[in-house]
Length: 356
Image (cartoon, rainbow, N blue to C red; front, side, top):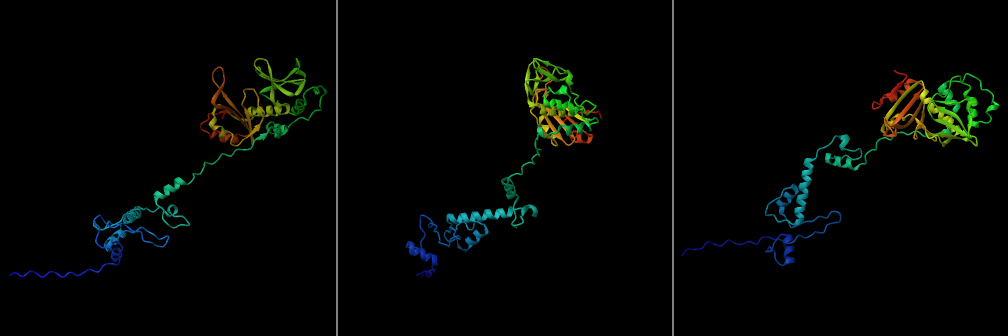
């Protein structure tokens, strides 16, 4: 009779502490056929809490810390998977980090490196520095322009003594009578684009007295009933009141004429409006009321030894309206060097006077 091999002695394994706790809680340490037990949240001090799953064992814990998946049959909870994935992503970011130069990647107060990806993100978030604003000089009021100083600057010192006030000038507007007394101290004509009639040639026609005219069909007059008002003649023979008083009108007329009679000049009839700020960069606009002649919209600018007259450009064909987007510019200077900044604007074709 064959004897059977002795049955191996079964030795009960010592239960782990957490297994005893599970047995006390669930009544048995046998695995649930429906699946692994649900992950439980371990209470930890505030600020250091984390989601922990079931025990992964020593191998599983080391694999999770190293960023590996560990044994395939290791039991993990959803919290455990999140920890592993988070550590793997952090490991990949550390591997792909490329340090920037110290001047770019590190700040003076923080020594931690900044990746190129982070630097680009920060550059997009920081506000861009706005372009430098062009300095705009303040406007000069017409009342602040001294007529005598202006004439001496652009026509030289007077060579003749001031004459006494003539009784035949008493009926003239006071500002016009003062002009005649001031202009008599220069031998040359102070106004060349127009002609200011001598007092003896001024005649009244229906109460309107013409005192100045150009070399075409434009004329300026005053009304005896309103001697402080300047009248501008129109092409249809009518008269309109100027927006400037007599004193302002005479100053405006002298400044405008100096821009065309200066010893050194630049002119152009087609300057793009986008370049006008470059033309007037060293100049200040004078706040004159404005004329209807040669067309509305002209402005006077003053600078150191510079005078500019700028207005709308005219079309090349009838009805001779304003040319959109362009201006005509006339700049006069006392010295040729004051016009060098205009010659540096390559987009403008200047007419030079005198030539050269």
